[in-house]
Image (cartoon, rainbow, N blue to C red; front, side, top):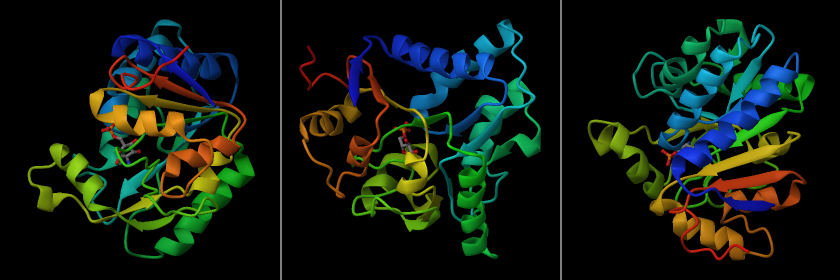
Length: 245
Ligand SMILES: N[C@@H]1[C@@H](O)[C@H](O)[C@@H](COP(=O)(O)O)O[C@@H]1O
């Protein structure tokens, strides 16, 4: 696992966007695992720019998102579908058949989750799995205590996560209490993992992860220790409690 402090948040975002761009531009049919959150906004802006300016053919690109709020209309501005359409799918002109988010409605949710994992298994491994991190160390919406062999499923959000995500909603009460998340085992089924962590709020969890020597299910991001190609990309603020050589 490689920890990198790239200084200003723009540099960190640009590095990740460039790595994603290279994969899409030079690989005919790229399969990506995508993430949402405030952290990713600049990264998507830069990635859209790079794909457009280089006239990259994205007709064979296919993406699987990490998570979605449970039972929230996909047209709701706070759904991850809306986020992805706004920041990436629509600006680059992807067709509906090219992107996938976990199905989040009440009907047949278990079968749909099974199908989501199966599709990734059949098409995968994902060439790059992009990850953010929650202040409690969650990846996707896999909260502390999630087994590392978990698959895509409905999950309960912790108070800490609801609190952290309340800034996007009108009221804290509007944040859904549940979500559908790609499982940790599914996340690990990828050739390469890039995590982006920006801002001082992420500094304590980054320091904790950096000092850990063994995986601990109470810190879901420590499941990444078992993967052979993980880059943790930080800005100065997220890396402020870590001494990097
Ligand atoms: N489920 C998402 C995660 O996939 C994301 O990585 C994380 C960080 O979000 P932000 O970038 O807004 O800090 O929290 C959310 O809860």
